[in-house]
View 1 (cartoon, one colour):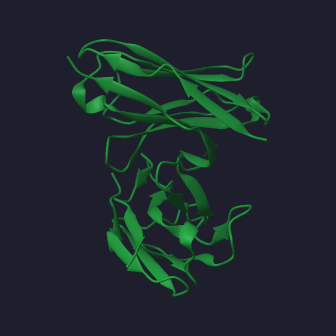
View 2: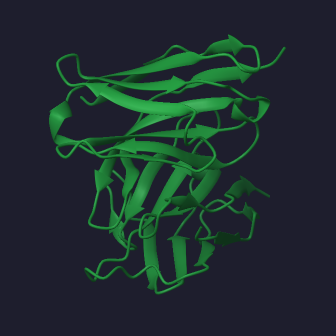
Length: 122
Length: 112
């Protein structure tokens, strides 16, 4: 059974940092791209970042470029999102999702975690 | 960025009756490889999103056949042939043809 379990969310002050983790199981992690998607309270879905499977390419939304870094530890089947210089508008539930990299883009697909809440507030 | 516009944003439904959601993109979603990377997701209350349809009309494993996707170019539709109680939630279209991947605003499906 495919499982994605996020952790690391919490309350942080503006300008602070957090590192999210996503532990994957039930599939061959190295064979898949992965994505982060966020959802602000009461709002819709926003793609944040993707990490391709084999090629190692990383991709970011303009809203987080230069502040967030996606990475993965294939030996531990874990995806990370390092979030720096956090702003109030980054407040959201952050989901990790298995992704697909076509010749076009890398986008979230069939399996999503339960999400972890990040609150940026003083 | 490609703007995905869904309508309606709120859809009152009746148990056992059909329902339909429209999704329009600001650019054609046909990629040079011939594929159209248009997906539909369902988010039930309090749950994570779940993909229902990929590449316009392909149902994911375990998705009931009352859900169907259609369309081409810039106009796409998700149809539920007979709404069941478990179909309540918010539905999103998402394009993966152009960077960055973008979602529609969501359509809230609820019973009348």
